[in-house]
Length: 246
Image 1 (spheres, rainbow, N blue to C red):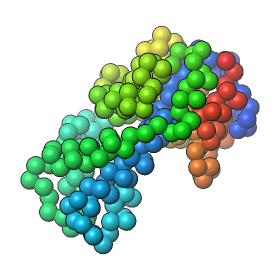
Image 2: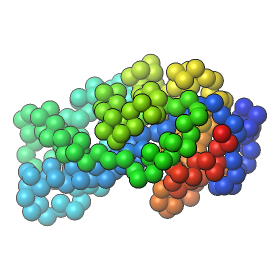
Image 3: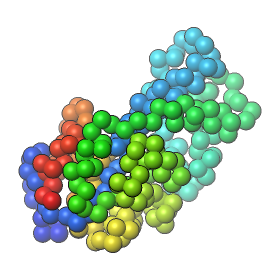
């Protein structure tokens, strides 16, 4: 395994990574339980429009499958933030045999209201942040700037995790674009080799940062899938102190 910043080696899940000056947290799936909030929201949204729908139990999985391709189109500049939302509502309605709403923005706003009401931090979020407060902290996330900042406030971490950094403030670069990681490190006033990223997505939060020399810790909350060799793996943010030397 190549060395990064003089500290990279072949780790087991409990070997420590190097000494870093900065740490970036992913947000959705790492600090905030996005999946639970989105699942509850789309189920409530469908139930309100089609009470007793025979496929209600499938709503969450179908909505999840729509997220990545439409968000990727927005990240690529193929559509606006609002347009990708409209496209998701249309696709979901067609899949579930619903009339497509005449006002797609209002329809998505209804889903979003359910979603916001279900925002909650993971139980280990505050404790995990507390263990690394000696570092320069930030949040690197692929969502919209305003919404992601609102999430950090809603889960009680505003002022504790540093700046919220999205592609909207990083020159249009979203994870796993190299510019997302180098730009985030620069925002902390550090070189990529001086920063470690902690997140749940292997491609965006582990392999992506590693490609630019940044450290990476994989948060595998459910211990349900194999991961890449050579990276520290934790199942809770409270384990950060076990793999990062402060």
